[in-house]
Image (cartoon, rainbow, N blue to C red):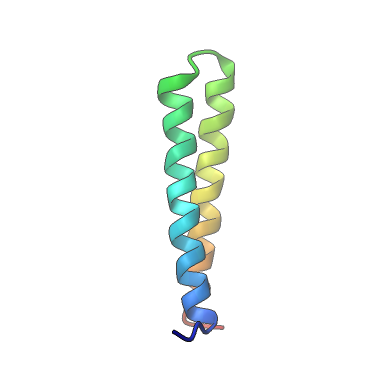
Length: 60
């Protein structure tokens, strides 16, 4: 299975979305104090980076 740049960006996007969902879930369900806001903010950051990877997928 050959992996070109678009395939690598696709896998990176999928992994970043999974990690982002996990971080948001940690912030929502595990930590009820101020740390939960930090986890959720980092999860949203992962979503934004995954969005950029997805936008780059056809252009690289």
